[in-house]
Length: 314
Ligand code: TXA
Ligand code: MG
Image (cartoon, rainbow, N blue to C red; front, side, top):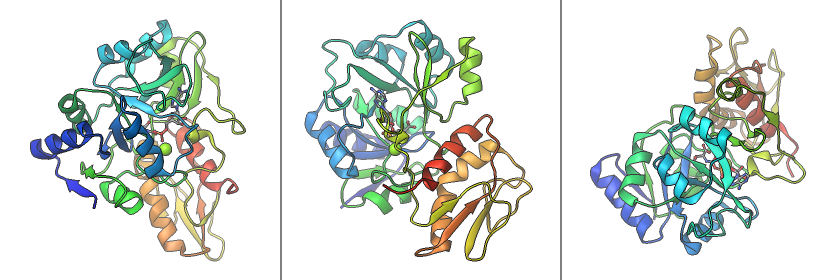
């Protein structure tokens, strides 16, 4: 059975104790819920891959409480340091060279010489990291290839019975996964996410090049078909075809709406819940259509997730 833990001192202590025993605990971050396990334990990390049904060549993000803890396991170049100081704690993941003897299970980075690290801002994530006092490997807490969870109930929908517990922190504020950057020597965007690219470029004083290769992914978020709802998805729709559930944005009004005022922050926070709701409304074999979303700010990450939801299923 998967236990639901309350967002209080007792729930945090129980969650930390489970992690220390090598068990898996889902916890809220400001982006999405993570499926946490002790990043130093081969067994816990192997169980994360098994619980998600995730291919073991897709590496995991290590969550740490602050920059000092990151520097104990990884090496920051000048660009990485600039981004860390500007955006941590927050929805940014940096891919960094792993330090020798860092003690991180090699399964975390799937044999790569680098490690992806993030300092989450969510107070419960911070409290859990402090109570556990170690590195927590955590992919999004959903079965591989499905929509990411932004509520504890979503975690249970996908993983109930496969993990020890979920720490219930209510809905996630950002609603989209972190932005992933390989910062040095040349900054490369590996996944658009909760920190808009424009803000990264302003902090760096240079343009990011776009990395990622759907044929040979270094990030599972880069697999062409990902974030898949059960229904088929059509993009750039201005009206619903017969039997389609239209999800509106701004002036395009649908049965559901990401943001009636055209607010991209609101749209990001609602995206994954809305995909689930639309899936429910569309029913088996149904179809979902999405209104156009501008390709600026968080719109870039929203469109990235929508394109993957709409991609042919592998
Ligand atoms: O917001 C987030 O990032 C959430 C929360 C829980 O922190 N986590 C998340 O994890 O989205 P996941 O596993 O769904 O996505 C992690 C991404 C994957 O696309 C993975 O391939 C990439 O990070 N990644 C991990 N280690 C990497 C590395 N060494 N090099 C390149 N990409 C890496
Ligand atoms: Mg994921």
